[in-house]
Length: 251
Image (cartoon, rainbow, N blue to C red; front, side, top):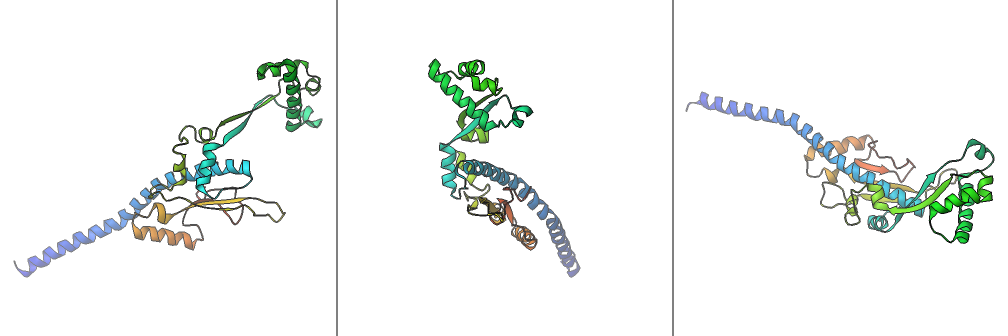
């Protein structure tokens, strides 16, 4: 084989290699972004689920929970309190000073008296009786006004059957990782300039966690870009420095 033929073969190989790297330089970022988008859908879903759980925890305890095991136990063992409403207050009633809490107290007193008198437990019968016979209820125009507190399964209400007590702990893990948990911080003593205490929450998943097995250079470039913009290099909800209503940084 003469020298010219060898050069031609080597040149052909070089061209093929060059074409490969050119295609790869275009395809790699596209593939990285496709996989990143796919994975972030799952990460965002768990962050939203955790945000819902923390909101319920704060509603009852007036603080957020940094320990995710404790948060899971809360979901498994705490019923969700809901108020079933029937009827409402008119503008005239509100102008007269009647409020929801006052109206509810009036009903509670009337129901207690009716229950003691009639010796029945059926709420429908009790309401029908007080609407017709209780003087205070009638004077305040509360016929047809009803408020009942009921308790439901917390997990079923929040997650619409997607999770049960047995698997709800899944929301605490970052998808596409080997059971790595979200970083969770709370600042339950934050006080505004007006002296109002506002508990703060922050839950995070760094790019290195759920993108760790993808192209290293693309991930490094992404982290560098977000860092230079002074953005968190990953997905998160909330902020322990300043209140933001637990917004996600993708929202």
